[in-house]
Amino acid sequence: MNDFNVTLYNQKLNTSWLGKDIKYFTSIDSTNNYASLLEKKAEHITEGMVIAAGQQTRGRGKLGAEWVSPPGGLYFTLILKPNLKPRNMPQITLLFAYAAARALQIRYGLKIIIKWPNDLYCCNRKLGGILVEPENIKDNLYVNLGMGLNVNLASKHLKPYEDTSTSISVQLGHSVHLETVLASILTQMEPMYSQFITNNDFAFWFKQIEKILIY
Image (cartoon, rainbow, N blue to C red; front, side, top):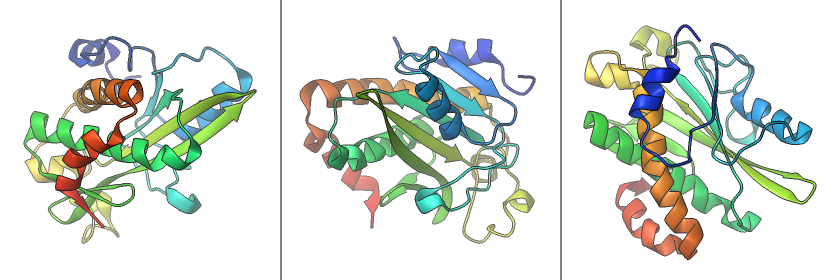
């Protein structure tokens, strides 16, 4: 964990339960894969647990496409147990994207656009993506919310995608703390998710989401 300071992360995190339990790896095959493995083994699972990594060797996006995950990015999976029907999974994808967009706007002043169904854009370039995978284990429905975010990647590290991709550090002109980025996103996500699950009212959040949503 040399490149991730858990103490700093905990200092920046302002939640009551979301993200309090974190496992960080300098490198891992896939944070979603690791979350699924824990669930299948029924080992040490708490709702709101985060699996995070500074690099993925087998990261993936939608439809199994490769998600290039070099060092300097932030790759993480949030484990939730929502009482949702499978057809409502796209709602939680958008909610997660909106939490990230809000966090990056508030913390860094970045104007983020959500591109349907699961991508984050800044200045017409891709900044990150989301992969949501349900896992049904012995009648327990887990939802693994995976996010890959280009944080401290220079333009040369984005090749051959530099014409269509960007990073937080490119946009700001300087690097930022991974701990702060992750904590900011989860701090935004907790009240949104809690209200969404308690009230079962996605329409309330979609009114906000559609302001920054493109198809």
